[in-house]
Image (tube, rainbow, N blue to C red; front, top):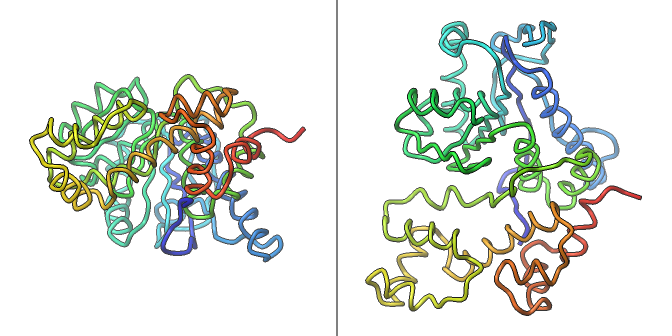
Length: 331
């Protein structure tokens, strides 16, 4: 199946504060506004945006960007479905004191079910709420040391450019934020809208990393340490040939006990979880490389490209070629 949300998307709020990098603020605005127009067209509603995309600030007041441009906003902090926290350049402690409304707002909105996203230094706000304690996160590489010192309870992963856990998303920088927005657009608006936005706006984005797999972070928020170890092992060995019986035995479990514990902890059967890992990896290869379908099939663990193509369609409702074509620039 393609990624779907259980509730309709009504509002995306992009947080503006003094010292914000205007480029990251407007990048988020453009991505989601374009998605709202594309989604509206798909729903047959014409050119009326399907959901609101608003720049917001504490008190609804204009802010002064890093480059000393006064940025108007469209509203105060309020109820929303997605919050994007762009990158900023300023003393975080000073900003925290200047804007005491932000942390309670983030906690309240997350408790209501909102998705929270931080880009680069914007991740500091997520960590300051305490919501990332015990969860995986990432940020821009220049901030690794400071972040680790400030937030020792957060599981900082310096190898990843994107992380997700319990509706908390972190992007290391501008390019990874693009991938995050496309993922969220797919989650809330469907694959066709996400691919149209990617085709329209990702002008020859060159990544120096693999986009990776999103959507698995929430499935690690459980207390079964052995199953969590197996999940990490699967992320490293998803393309290998192995039997779940052997994995279970190596971790001191019968296959029946393993199947039961895995589904109880993650909500997925092991085979379905493995298939999703492979398909998500394949999606990144299809959109980010020119490798053949056969090569990608082999690299994610399937010797039979026809079987891979059928499985890919089951998960995405598109063939591998259709998925790739919608990410390519129109001729």
